[in-house]
Length: 292
Image 1 (cartoon, rainbow, N blue to C red):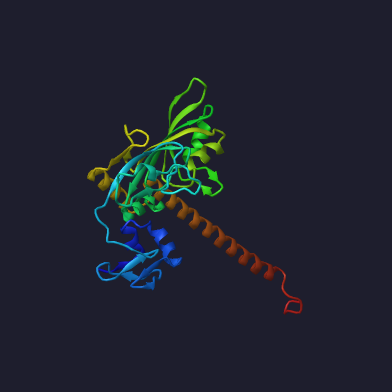
Image 2: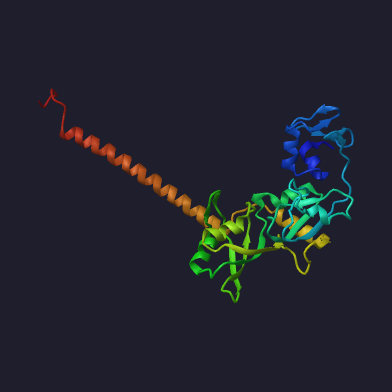
């Protein structure tokens, strides 16, 4: 059965679909001895596909893991600076698997790891709004006013964040705060930047959940297979089309009402201007007319 080349590469675990597209554009992929073209279709049973000169085998069983990334570990398979990476903890697995998304170097917590490109795309696609929950320790006591700003969405250099769910967890003897925050985006260092924006830098950050899959008691460096129920749960969650929530619909209706109101105001202005011009012509007839 034919499929898009980038979809095939993603499904075999070579790379995410977006990365596969980049590899095709860079000329690193060939089909039947010829350079591949972006968007072309292939039949894995008939076509001979290579990446960087190496044959791509049809994928074996799909693998899904929960991994507790420790602090001071890169959430990648390689690091040019020679720092520890996720790959250092995957030596017992023969198949090529890779992290779904990122956690910054100084953070710890749950990373999903797989060889299923479609699964990774579902989790990472911003339109799917997969919830990610973090427990953070921030400097100082965060006032309710600042929490409301974060909940509503706060302006960062790359745009306004989507609404977040935040609750107090506790305080430390030093006067710092523990909070739990759930977001639906995956911007770089987003949680840290959000709290920095309101004057409370993050001291510690730990991701505890992704799409309902929980870190639980898995210790730093620990790896466990996801259960079929967990995989199905996150796939179902991700595949739900991004229908507007009741609140979003209300906002949309409100925007439509505002738009209609604005159009009416503009129409009234035009009608008023037309009427004013007409009245002015009657009051000030041109010189040389029949009444001059």
